[in-house]
Each structure stands twice: as structure tokens, then as C-alpha cells.
Length: 110
Length: 111
Image 1 (spheres, each protein chain N blue to C red):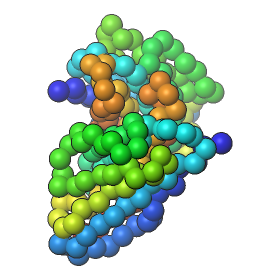
Image 2: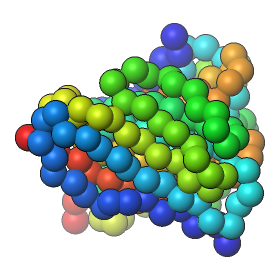
Image 3: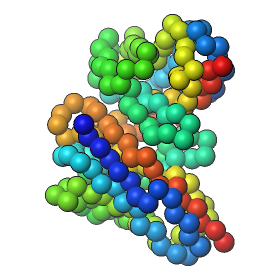
Image 4: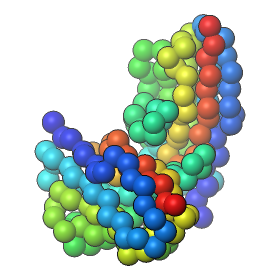
């Protein structure tokens, strides 16, 4: 079945450094979405980005369908960026099946 | 504006007891609704989805069932809980084009 691999598993940065999070998927996709998972578990949508590049403030997401990958770039990281980032894709074979990556745990220290 | 509400926020239940988790969405007619589960430290897994009242599709079998009794309501349940049911349950709807929004979740501990 569809597989989604995120890398790195964890990342430690000093405040001000940039972060690049990757998501690779094994088959065709219908959509790609990045989420931030709060320590309590709830999810906040960061980007809905099925293809191309989107930017919002310090965050940029790029999805390249042909290469079966999506990335989330965080520039000038801040302590409040710390947390777990998840990517999720909807299977492109049809239906409403969504597969999540296992996440990247980001820690930004002062 | 659309809102999604899950209940309860948290539960501690005994093995073998029944469970019912609820999800309601307001402000959106005929939403596509989803249930997800995440074991502690684990990956989010899609359990069920429903695109219309009375119809539910299972994605992963975890000895759970789901129902959609109303257009705005999605229920996750089981008659007998297992230890392995512990975790975090999330309900979601999609805004169309597969742009998902999640509820705040229910944390379940089975003892």
C-alpha cells in the first residue's frame, strides 16, 4: 500500500537556524498536507499543498509530484516552532484514504 | 464558520467495557468525515471515513465500528474495549479538495 516516509525523525536547532523537513511517498498522490501536532495531540494545518510551492511567513512548502516528495522549510526558526510536524497524503488511486508520515520532532533551543 | 467538536476530551475505561466517541461538525452540509487513531508515540492511522449519512467505510480494522446517524455527526464505538485501543482519537472533515481540518481529539486510556 501507500507509504509515506518523513525525514529526519528528529531535529535540534538553535534559534535562528533554518530547518528542512522532507516527506517522500511511494505511489501517486491526490493531495499533500502538512500539519503541526501540538503536545496535547491536536493537529493544526500548516499547508495544504498538492503541488508547487506555497509560502506563509517563515514557512515554505514545495511539493513535486513527479519526484514524489514534499518539503517544509522553516526559516529563522523560533522556540515556538518546536513540536512535531506531520505530512499526510491522500492516495491518488481513488477513494478517501489518507496516509500520514511518522513525523519530524523539531526542537528549537535558545 | 465551520466548527468541529469531539467528545469526550478524555476517557479512562476498563478492558471489556463499551466505548462511544462522538464528533459533530457545524456550518458545513454533507461533509466528508473521518476517524483517526494514534497510539502513544505512534503514527496517525485512518480508521473510517464517511461521505454521506448512513454510509461508513472501514480503512483499518481495530475491532471498532463507526456510524453516521446524522449529516453532522460521526460516532466511533465498540462493545468491548481492548488494551490496544488506548491512544488518541481524532475526527476530521475535509474542506473539499482533500484539505483536512481536525477536531481537538479524545485521549483514551484502557486499563
